[in-house]
Image (cartoon, rainbow, N blue to C red; front, side, top):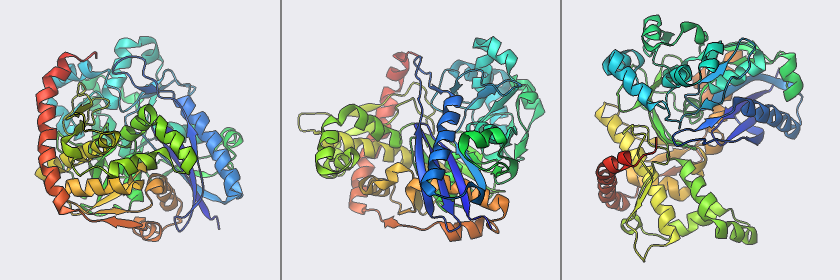
Length: 506
């Protein structure tokens, strides 16, 4: 019997490949790098071929590190970042870089379509408001700005379906990524031909839809030569990275909630019934017959990566001397600062903002500087600002009827005990932390495991593989401090909203 499952995660800053056994233990994992391009204000794009090159090289390295026979891989699951618009021709050639989830170049197109079709008509079908960061307007941006590309389009793929295609030569669209297109019926999980026509998106551009755990194809000889995988290894459709991370954190029952600490921030609340709110994001879960009510923010773990890159030269040098990482040292100086950062506030709108404000013009802001503030204040305020954006989304979800009791943290920022505790204190919710670094790829391999029959169902898979490593309880004294800072956080955005719009270069 084949013993292992392989997961592929297409992140924003890097890819990850991991091999798991049936108990959810990591046998080996490796990271691969690629670029993010910022050619103009509002433009954020990546080259899918660079994803594929990094992934097949990383698969080879992971197999070598694991020291296992490639024939022992029972199945492959792929998860990926949201809202790509990968245009390929009939031969599978990528026609242009894809705008990614942070890209807002199509904002004017959204405004026009919302007027022409009607915001309510779009929302009532798709369960999501039409915003520039989604796939829909990016396709039409190709039509209006890259007509030669548009005329050559055979299919539009998402990040995970593109890698599935490179592995199997099968074109697919999984249900969880359907929410990127506003011609996707969020109740039925099908394409809506009438809305396709109204939006101006040819139905032929859209691949057949598959359940996320469904085997769609098998590794080809070409892909096997590049990756080191065995020919014929089953590959499932896979899904949205946030949804796979939600599964990998053990969230499969109504109102269980994942807190996301990857490049982006936010949360995903599991629902067993359709419930949409235009301020939030609704997608299908990768688990059948469930939805995820999501908050998706641009300022998550990426905020700390940016801060470390730009302002942590000293910590990098000190880390070499002490054997600690620069991020550990930043955590240490932030931990010496009082809760509330002595009145310093950070707005984490580093690429505009998604839910719940949906403002492409929003900007990152530090407020409350004076001569008493230290680098530690900057770090802690950044952590608290991301936590406020999480609370903002949770508060909106509560007004929509989704009240939660506990969060399950995943992603790199969940490794920070300080940051996780801040999120608990800000939200007033306890936070359980499973294996935070592997939750997303674990979710992808659970899909593969269920798809190939290694697990009886999702209940068995989660029970066998997901283990809580630590637990954070909110400090209610700090929670009271954060209540005041949170009010200021909200007021700052409101007061700066028009300033940001008037001075935006988009």
